[in-house]
Image 1 (cartoon, helix red, strand yellow):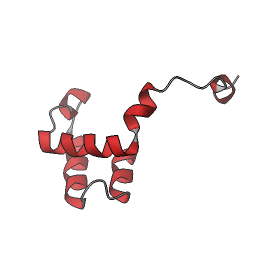
Image 2: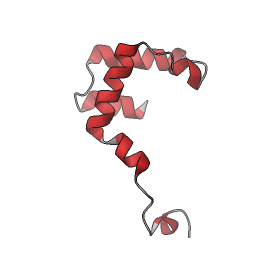
Image 3: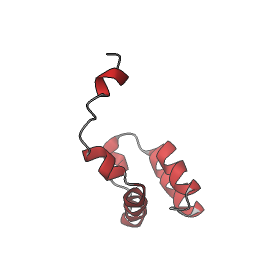
Length: 72
């Protein structure tokens, strides 16, 4: 939910989209239920994620000093 809130704060989602997405997630009993979100809401999340570079963060290799951050 924090990411969805940040998307709203950055004006990447409208207040209505934020409300609808948040409500869908709150009602979902499983990740599979979240995946059943209506396409227009998914498209809004995907566009906002692209602007925020979320996908880039997920595929970026870990930094060489990552062990120091994890308790090394």
